Image (cartoon, rainbow, N blue to C red; front, side, top):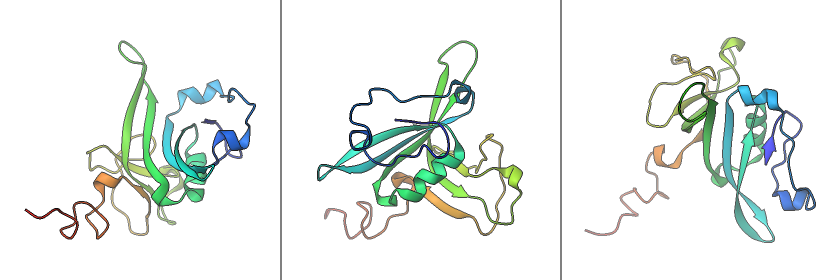
Length: 161
């Protein structure tokens, strides 16, 4: 599913939204910006199925995340266009995603994230960002979350040795 602009957000399975539609419109100008690949579970005919959405705008990604339960999120990746030899797109998985603190400058952008195993917090232009109080964690990849009682890594869930 292509989600190209605010207001086009659909968080239902495409078969429920437009069963006869065979394609989704994409705005080619948006191909120059980084895109986000959002993988999450949706309910369809009483079953949970995986849905992958290609999202073109930071604010649209935030709108989607506001409607999707955190437990249903499988992953978020950033796709960025590259020029020159080699692949024309690079995909990096986002390990954590934050909303900036209310007092931070608007120039910082609508979201901040860490990519893969790199601990450096970055804005959407990939510039490093320092620490600030009041940021809100929106998403954290399962492998990056600390071990809790429901985690397979938690001592209470490990098989006996």
